[in-house]
Amino acid sequence: MTEPEAGAPARKVRVLVVDDHPLFRYGLCTVLAAEPTVEVVGEAATGRDAVSAASAYQPDVVVMDLHLPDIDGIEATREIVGVRPSTGVVVLTMFNDSESVFAAMRAGARGYLLKGSGQEEIIRAVHAVGRGEAIFGPDIATRVLGYFNSAPVASDPVFPELTSREREVLGLIADGRSNAAIASILSLSPKTVRNHVSSIFTKLHVADRAQAIVRARKAGLGENPTDRRS
Image (cartoon, rainbow, N blue to C red):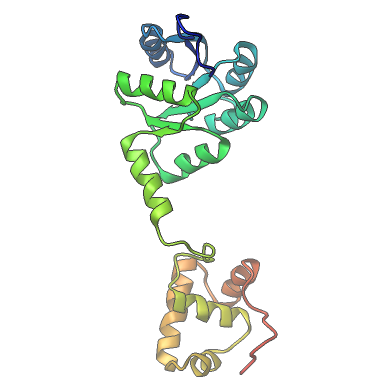
């Protein structure tokens, strides 16, 4: 947004409201329209309508719900930002899980608030995103900061439900090793190996060694030509 000339009235933030619940959408439009610095230029009840309305009305900010008919708010955000990078999207939703938060951010959203946020908080977010800033509700901000402050990892492990030792054992199973060979390679007792194998079968919901091998190899484990000490 450009700075207004001296003495000229500040340009209103043009807002498109997207939500599939008519009463909530009406209430949100009413709140925003009552703010002198905000102009509600349109509203939409579906993801496809949101994309069309953003193209037609060219808003500065879209206040976007995630749960929508046809395409969801994530995809609608991606399409809107892809065509109009200057349009900022503020997600306003009931979903506070990490998957939804980071999916919205990857799609291009610059704000994320939970339904139940106060009127002042929503208006403040609209203005901030309209200025090109990013803003998150307190709970969401804590989640985002916690993610980026956590120790980095090289990649997500395959079968995260398994312990690191169980993944080692599974890799050797997928490599065709017997329990005796696994015990020798990992310097474990045969009983410990049997316990690990039983735990692996339970956690992966497989009935036998053959099924475990199939799952492990599909995930890229096993068939390692190096270090074959059987």
